[in-house]
Image 1 (tube, one colour):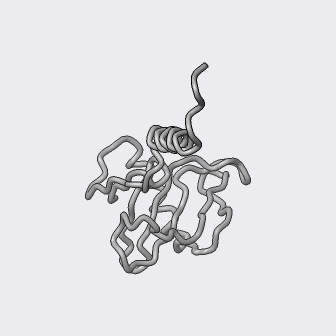
Image 2 (cartoon, helix red, strand yellow):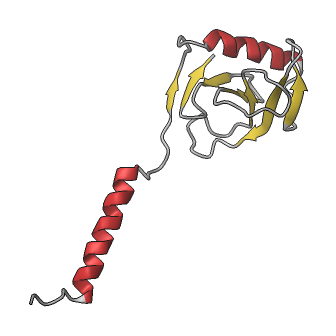
Length: 133
């Protein structure tokens, strides 16, 4: 009969396994890519949304707003730039690109507007990447 490993050895094995699982799961700080122009698909849609939101004065309160196609679009209010991917020191607001029925689930397409300068960023994947419009 083989002797059981000590509790220290068992603990080391468990900690190594947990560390491996965390590494495999990709638990690490978020990192977005920021581009100075927007030439990917859907940039035209983001520009149209920017124009429509601008005509509404870029509302700052989160909520549903009537849209030009008879449906609604949502703004989530302030975007806090927690990961620091966009230029710091600015106040940003985030707006959905695509309209839908009021109350419907939101998709991943957003524009983020610098309230001072009006510079607008398009994120087609919920803040993983930013493209300047």
